[in-house]
Length: 120
Image (tube, rainbow, N blue to C red; front, side, top):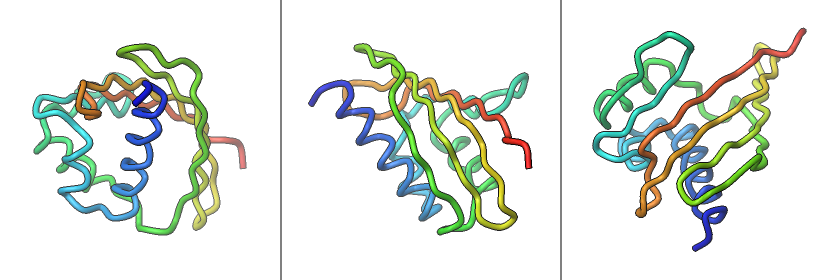
């Protein structure tokens, strides 16, 4: 599997977890000691249990978003992804920049997301 294939597979699984909000789907995305950075200056969620809890606390309802992405750079241990997320109700759009570090099994060791809301 190429690095881009691994990134695409991870993002596909992330979207599936985004839609299911199933703790097992969420946890499977990350290594045991994975870190999820969600907002500037906020402490990251570290470890699967904390990531699942943080995710579920901020979850979106299934079927309320669309998501398009493309890679900016993919190396052996780093992927930077640019994306657009659209919410239905209330209607809003965000530009996203993701920094993703996967291990050899395709799980995230570190995931950082930045987002900017488009003007209404």
